[in-house]
Image 1 (tube, chains in turn brown, purple):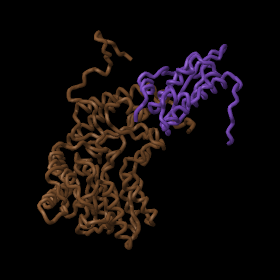
Image 2 (tube, chains in turn orange, brown):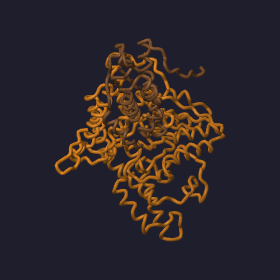
Image 3 (spheres, rainbow over the protein chains, first blue to last red):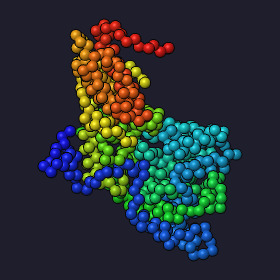
Image 4 (tube, chains in turn purple, blue):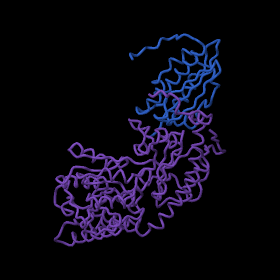
Length: 426
Length: 139
């Protein structure tokens, strides 16, 4: 270490070099995991933690009416963002519940019509695990593969639909690799075949234009905390016309939310979700452009400074703030360790008991070694160019150091084909 | 996850990073792990043929911070030891020294494997008979 003792006896380390203007550590760049609450959202919520505490289901006094009014306003704000009507919005505790309610609720309601559900392999676990549970109950589930760019092949979907298919559930945008599926085509195909279409749109809503009419979506899951709203609140859009979708309730109780989801409404959370949707709608166009520019800038910096970098996922059909990149021959967790004042995610799962890398990256057909080398950058509303510069410079520096340490990088540089080596698996 | 100070220290200042001439007769090379598993360690030793003392050791590792630290520590420990003394280093010593959590124990196992593989390679090159019989597992 090049630590020096100054004349005052204080240890001055290398890291005490002043940070660039506009950079405060730690830097949060993991906005697919969750987003910070927008201060404007917090302001909108505050009264509902205080004076306006009524139960939105209380019909006999002003406390209840006021709460109900706030909830109905939020319903409209959410509906407006996705091209729905407010009566089609059901409040839930978040997207995991929304996905469970949508898939289980439709499976149960339409059981007599058929028992076949189609989804795809890179869905969130909230969809995959729900489908697995339904398989145990006698449903048949087709898990469509994805192509090397992360998109499904619409022809595969066409072939998979049969006369027993009741539901197709395909996510709008992927949480790891940011690819945006051909939702409009999928929806059109489903409507043509008379099959209901659900989409987990958690990563897409508020980031890119989502319109349930134009996109032919019947049921859609969304969440507050991915769009600078509060955690613990989400919504499910359930189409009321052409076709009218029926959902069998999964939580029984007071018959709230038109019987589809009982339980006293989380009024402050719902107000926050509504406000978050309103802001996202107003700022989407400018913000998507800004984040796309930052992301392309980040990608270009890596590609210029480093060899053997690999972008994961189709970049033409992509979320603005997402970049998933493999820094091949460097293991992801060791890279994260070198940038411990920056919050990003790794597709490597060296800490997990299974040591399995991300199933999403594996579904693209990437070798496990490339998957182990991947980092997900999630740019958001509060990230700045100065932060992007700081993070990219730091990563370039750490990757270069770790490659000096990497036997694989040395071997590849010497022209050795790593696939020809007989590795001793342990 | 939180790393112990010793893991962080080895990660920030890895000891004995580098490459020895693997074709030299006094050099033994161990390459263990697999890219698919997220860890590959290469540990090399240079052995004095007169004394059987490991005079130099180098490593390169692709893997998490604990894997880097385990192999860095292994090179530190084998240096100056005889072949037999180096073979006595066990993964549990590494776990203890680096305070590795249970999910990282495989890193220490890999480091022990790397030491053994490097010594095995050196012995093969120099036609040294196995001095310590290795327990044979039923196949």
